[in-house]
Length: 328
Ligand code: 8YV
Image 1 (cartoon, rainbow, N blue to C red):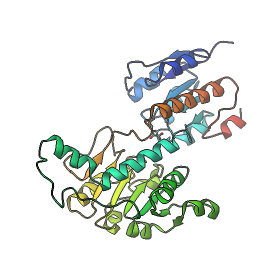
Image 2: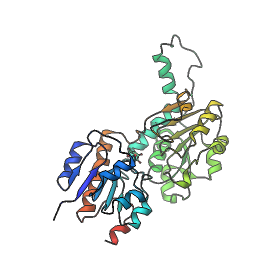
Image 3: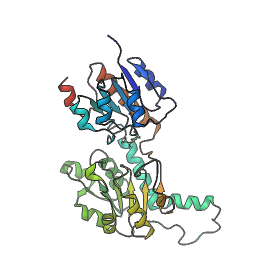
Image 4: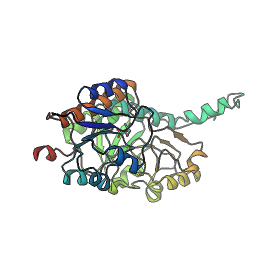
């Protein structure tokens, strides 16, 4: 039987590409060029599978131009770059990489919240500029994190690790909001209390966003929501750009309607709203919440496991639309 052909759309650990070469004819991208939609579609000609990241959009037009495609395997837990309905309608399996990045991302979310509340970036820049000449009683005073109220908007796997760190680690009171609620036995050990969105916004000292991006979550935090937060509150986004209205956030920070923000994701990234760059009260990081060496390796291997299983008759470990497999 001829070996399937696959595209590895971005540069990735060489040993993971080698794993794929054991099963497939592989076109890889060691130069890590970001393909335009037209180039991605052209490179997928004749390929049955794709190893993708969040930067490759898989939509109906691309699928129609590549009717031979059987599987698209994202090296990411988020998959808003996939039109899953269009894939399902054409029998294309979609997979993602849940679970392997949860604790690493929770570590980062916690670090970003801490850095934001305690003004770590702002004070470091001051020091590097050579402006630190003496101690002052109010120099870079921030907001306490321990014993404060953590608000989590969103749900799913990441809520519990963040809540666990917060409640059991440093005695935070944890409230969360999402369309659905954790079971009582999941809430109890981490002391998480379900509240409505208005209560979450009004009571959180530190608000962390962990919800997936969709049309429904677009600008879930905009001017109206920011206006409901405490002027002393911080906002941390480790979920997706577009969940926060970045222009409204920049304005709220400029007018000191909230105290500070920690952002790992941005609308239109890697471009940033320039207003954010001018604000000292924002900690900015380039979408690295899952970026520990071990976790990125685990994500790449899980995406490869999915691709190998999908095209060799196996059971992909983390399918998004498993109904496609049932109908094969
Ligand atoms: C990825 C992420 O690194 O998993 C996700 O959803 O946001 C990150 O961990 C990024 O999407 C690249 O694929």
